Image 1 (cartoon, rainbow, N blue to C red):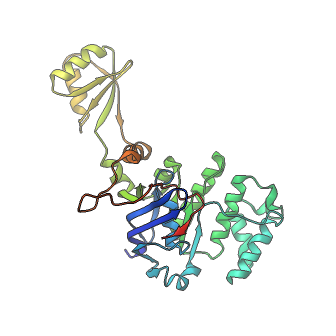
Image 2 (cartoon, one colour):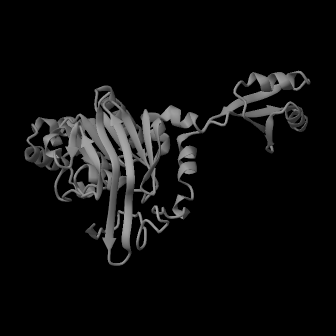
Length: 334
């Protein structure tokens, strides 16, 4: 498959008078192939938004190579801008304008037929609220309007930074359905979100960033499989005896108040057969599979406390204070 987005060795630092030099992205790589729904995950301040801003030409990177829909970014980005829709951070709208007027002005400015306005309002569930002023919108409604603005161009590539921010459960489900329908229509979607359960359901591929570096990537099922310890939750009438029986059989067992956890067993038949041979009948045998949230926390936990990278001669790679919270007002680009 061809690449919709390709990033190699991206590096970006900021300078501020108060906090010195800040490394936001440090040699980051990412590949999003055409047709994927790709999740982009990381803790606050990990470099996600800086990466997206660099990709879209909103900040100047210090090093690295990027391409969007086959052209170098940001140098040749204008050539494909009409095929890309994006939301980065929280878009701002004129409070006194209606949603319909806002989108109409954006359509006229972008050379998009104004007939698209009603179509995208319908698609994000704002058709009946399109004539209301934006000042009266909730945060979730403003997010829907932002998604509508990104869809105006009927893009081939859609980049969404926290599109479910402020949405209630029903709104999150609608956003999930919208993302799926876009993917089914052939749109490539890069989705950044803190709602990890949604990413696991919606996305087929994922990239996780921490401290400005990629810590894992690949198909969601393959990433999860890499953290599968083959654990099973077991309930029996005599848990203490069952623990002893399984332990004597060489199985790793952890006792909990109301169940046992057996680790490292690929075929659960080994558990039920071992217990059954001793007259212990299994009431419950449930696989404990890793989810994206647990994998994310394991990969990113305590990385803020990690030792600073060193150069070849052993001296610190960075000067000043490292602070990855790039959502603060930036200083002068390096």
